[in-house]
Image (cartoon, rainbow, N blue to C red; front, side, top):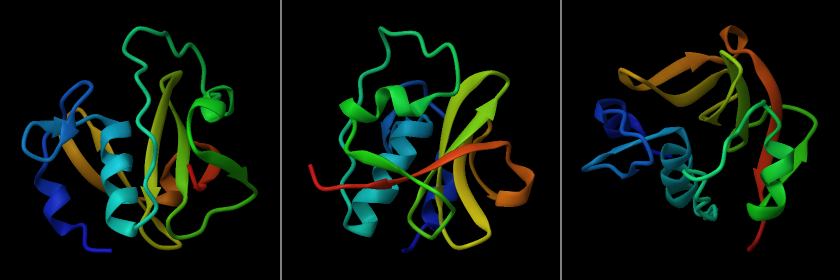
Length: 121
């Protein structure tokens, strides 16, 4: 999957387009779209996500938890107690949003809570 152009995208709360910017979920939606595995959008703007348990939201999303990392997996990370998602580009790297914009990070440097794969809607 081509992703170099995403590294220039700025952060925007609840952002869903490359032109306006992404939040972490918006970036993951775009990555899944490019990979041919569409991910359902989730409006979490009105609900609080107090802990890192994306599994609670999996019923509203088209994902299922998997035991380990693999390319194309969604990565649930603990980012200062908040839910944060990224997308596995390859076996070692996660594409995710930061307040400074899109970033590619080594998986080993992330505080990973779980991995998910996108299922059919």
